[in-house]
Image (tube, rainbow, N blue to C red):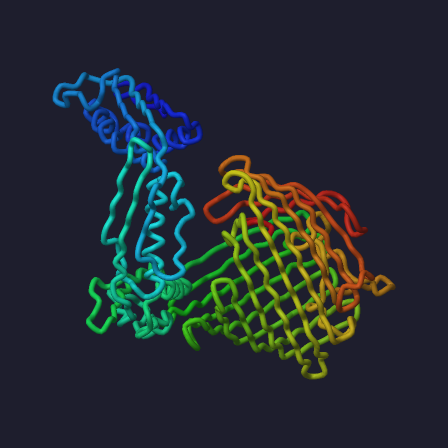
Length: 585
C-alpha cells in the first residue's frame, strides 16, 4: 500500500510466537483490521491522524490475540522508534516515516471450564467450546449465539445472556468461561403491523406473507414470511422485526417494513454462433401491475439470424404471475405465446395458451402444474399437417445451486411430464423431459469448478411419423453439442427425408478455472444421442464435440466465448464459435 511521503513510508508487523500457524493467522488479522494498514492515503495525511490510528490499533491487536486464544500477549506499537502510548499528542513531529507493530503472543490459552446454562433441548454447541480446546473468543461468541438460537427455535424470542464470567489463569494458560442464559417466556406471534407505505395493497401483502398469527414464535417462520414477499420481486427490501414488548398473554407483534421496487424493467440479450447465426432477445416487465404484487412479462426473440442450415425463428410470449392464489406458497399464472420455427427438419407456426399454478414445497423443491391448449401448422419431409393438442404439463424442480448465473456448488434437477390429448384427429401421448446439473468447486475460493449436465427426452404414444414435429428431438449446437452443426443429428427416414427422434440423451462436462478475478478459462466435452424409439436402447446415433472457452465476469453474469469442433459422429466438420452471456449451463 502506498501512503504519502509526509505520512508514512513503511509499516512493519512482527509476531513473536512458538506457534507459526497462529502467528500467521494473527498477522493476517492485524493487516486486515489495523487502522494503519487499511487506511486510504487520504485518511492519514497528518501526523495527528497517524498517531490516532496507531493508538486505536492497540485495541485492534489485542482483539486479534484474544480471537486466537492468546491472553497474555505483549503489544508494542512504535512510530519512528517511539512507543505511541508515550507520545505527547500536542507536540508531534511534522511527519512520521515508519510504523512498527511488535507482538509477543505468549502461550495459547485453553479452556479449563466451558459452561453455558441452561440450554434448550437438542442445542448443538461448537465443537471447539470444550475443555482442553483453544480458548478463542470467536468460539465463545459462537457458543453464546448457538445457545440463544436454541431457545429462539423453541419459541423463546427474547432469550439473552444474563451473566458472563471469564477468568484467565495465567500461570497455567487456562481460561474458565461461564455464561448464564435467561430464556425468557415462550412467545406466540401476535399481529403483523405494516409500518411503511407501499403501492402493493395491504390485503395482498398479508395474503402473500402468510403470517402465522397465534402460532408459537419460530425464527424460521420469520424467514419464510420475508422470503415470500421478496420472491414477488415487488420489493427492493423487506424487514420483519420483533416488537420490544411481549404482551401479558405471551403474544408479540412483528413490525413489517417494505420498500417498493421500480415497477417497470426492460432487458436485452444477444448470442452469436458460426452456424446457428445470431439471436436477439428482449423483455418488458411490469411489477405490481394490478396492486397485488403481480408480475406481467412479455418476451420477444429472433434467432437463427444468418444461419446456414435453417431460416429465422420468431417468438412472442406473455406471462402473468399472481402470487398466493391458494395459500402463501402457491402462485398462479396465465401465459400465451406465438412461435415460428424454421428448423432443418421442419417448419412450424404455433399458438399456445396455458393456465396453471406453482407451489414451493420447501426451500429446495418447487412443483408446477398447468392446463394448456396448443395449435400448430407444420411442414416437414412428411408433408403439411395440423395439430390441436390439449396438454397437462407437470414439473418438479430441485435446486441447491450456490448461484443461478455462475454456480460453484450444488445441484439443479428439473423434470417435466406432459400428457397430451389429440383433438381434431391429432395423436395423443406423453412427452417427458429432464435436465440434471451438478457443480463442485475446488481449491481456494472455489477457483476450479467441475460441472456436469445430463439431459433426457422422450415422446411415447404416437409413431414417429405421427408425432408433432416440434415435440421431437434433434441434437447439435449451443444447447446440446457444441462443435456440431445446429440440430444436425436427426432420424434418417430414407430417400433423403429426415425427422426428429422420439428419444434424446445429452451429456456435457466442463472444467472451469479462474485465471484472474474477472477472467476464467473452460474446457468442455458434449455428446448427444437421437433415437427413433421412445426410450434409449442404443439403436440410434451419437455425435460429440469438444473445445475451449473464455469467461469474462460482469455484474450480470459471465460473458461466454467458446470454440469447439466435432470429436465423433458424421454430422459436422470444422470449428464452431459461440458467444453469449452466462455459463453454457
